[in-house]
Image 1 (tube, rainbow, N blue to C red):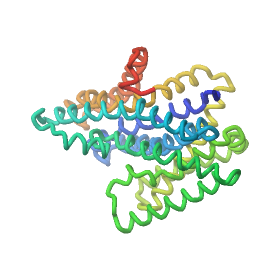
Image 2 (tube, rainbow, N blue to C red; image 1 turned 90 degrees about the vertical axis):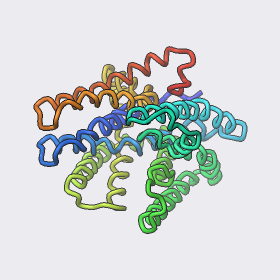
Image 3 (spheres, rainbow, N blue to C red; image 1 turned 180 degrees about the horizontal axis):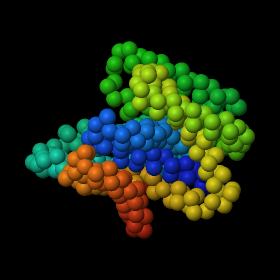
Length: 350
């Protein structure tokens, strides 16, 4: 049994906070005028959080490779897929059903409008909730992961490097092709969109100790790049300097460097005994999957708080802060309570 990577849980904790910040500020961005002095604040907070999805993808590749790279065979693959189905697919199906009904009723629909076809379509596309596309995405990585590991091991020391290069080529080609032909309107559900991030994670996980040591030795470089890419992404979003492929390169570079920097930060917090911060972020990381599943429902209720306030009123921004605080606190408490229930994994995985 390999050691638990506490720094990865800390990094995952920061990533879920990024998700909460994106979703917590998105309604405010759609409600207030771009001339408002608060608009730029919400925009910056929202764009800073854009590292989160590719970071989750990278960390998933890392943890899977760390756990299975040396041992994955046919028997282990069966166990691998069984666990993914039990602890990921089952909660996903339950929450798809929940959000299908929840959003239908929330927007004035009737239970008479429910249909098996619509449920299956939403299940296949992750469209029952605006956040569930990630489940469709991550399942694709689970499906290709055993093949990636087999290819990575086949060429001994250079296998994972070759796999990383191949992933980069595939991602670039599919991105350019889709940008030109517009085959897929929502490319966020396609595994090639973040294939490089997943492959980098898999590469690090296969050689975790040596890889992290190399990253740690270059921590000033990674932290500097993270800040510069963050600033570049925020400026690009604010000023609209570029779009398309260039914008995607900026966002994904920012995300990958941030993911690696967060691993460094996690190790720093643990080594320097910043116990309160490390434990808080570790708790968020452990609860991340459950928080991800639950928080949109909590946010929908929290957003009702602002229905009586115009963005021009003095109370509006205070209400926005309150609803952000609610999704930072309530989902995590619910997840911790559910974890105490024997069959809680049905709702929040394991």
